Length: 412
Image (tube, rainbow, N blue to C red; front, top):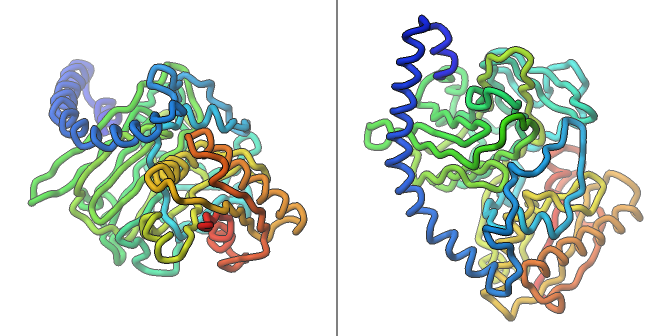
């Protein structure tokens, strides 16, 4: 990484090295910018057309940038209203997979111990608490990989999500690195090999190197530049669909690569940041398998299930990353004006039965209100709270509980 290599050079060489690398990156970005804009133009145009036809979505001038919002300190929580969430994340189109493969909210972890659901590839990792939030802290150049019983667990279509903590200075040197591997035990043997396809995500953007027709290609894009002095959590979301890769930092899509020329079977997460005193931490890690399109599921089953509509713990307040699914549902219902749904909330078995029924009803209502703000007539939606009464998986594992926490849209 440039930041670490430069530090070992003589002072004069540092200057020329920095200039050369900046020039190289500028040239790469100039070429790739046009390609990326062309790929994303039609998608954004379609989303804009649907969300703006009733005047319910904020225009670019009205939508507030995530970087202009105050960042909560570790341990702080805030309830996001449906209105502000819909405006800020109005163009978010990341949709998580349907079935949870791996979920680690760290709720069972003990402070100071190694994360029990992970294997250490290199370096050190430890459970910790920032404020009142449980996290996994990593040292510089540490790499961890999920402990999953199935050897090659990533399907042809999957999503990966986690929250990463970024510090307020030298943000371009602090990177969380996601490595994809073809399977077997290559996550140990080839962890530093370029064939592992390292995806670098920093505070300002992301880059990935890919081999296509035996030529190395680097895809890189910078997102909105955050103001100096900001620090805190950002939501990282990655979707993979038979070679196509998309990467989001909060609501901003920072990469859209049509083919990374790899069928990933194993994944690891690491960090590079040599600055002393920097917080290097991740939390809320989830891997999910993709599935059929929403309308195909309605035709086949008369309903669809989503686990991508997320809420604050024990509350009915929507998390902003839910907007990807909500935007997709709004598009679907506008394209098929005959569709009407019973929105049914489901919980896991934690807590009292009566409370879970009330909570699931409140969450179903929150979903209805969010869709109404996206231009869907309320008369087309009913709500129902099912609580924990209809599980689809066990309630003894994090993945089972995550699969039970869901919202079902049943056609009426």
